[in-house]
Length: 145
Image 1 (cartoon, rainbow, N blue to C red):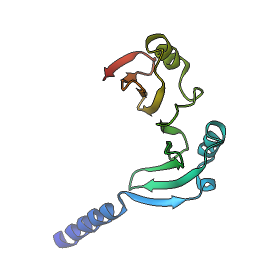
Image 2 (cartoon, rainbow, N blue to C red):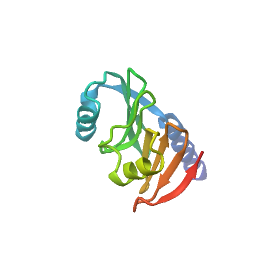
Image 3 (cartoon, helix red, strand yellow):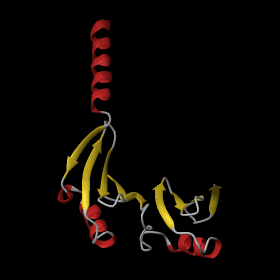
């Protein structure tokens, strides 16, 4: 019985390693509807170079890379998790108003190049290389240069 249980544990471990980091190219129309709507709304003039689904044992996410190098990551429901716009800036409608106002007031010459939402926190990266983290009440909780 011990050998059987040990064999099951080993099989599960091997299966987990094989399934981890399983990237699969997909078509844009295979993204969740919310993700498709987000792209059509905020990146309508961008051409998609790659859309892929990443799946593991306990998660699923989607990445969309545009031909100009900009990138958007979505969770399994199609909600954006990260927007990277190295060539331009993150569309203003994506950034919460309180964060836009904070950046405008404190860094008027900087552009927001990245925004990430994770566990009720927003992290932004500015064109002046500052990284600012906000909590769910839009209060600054960390600044890195």
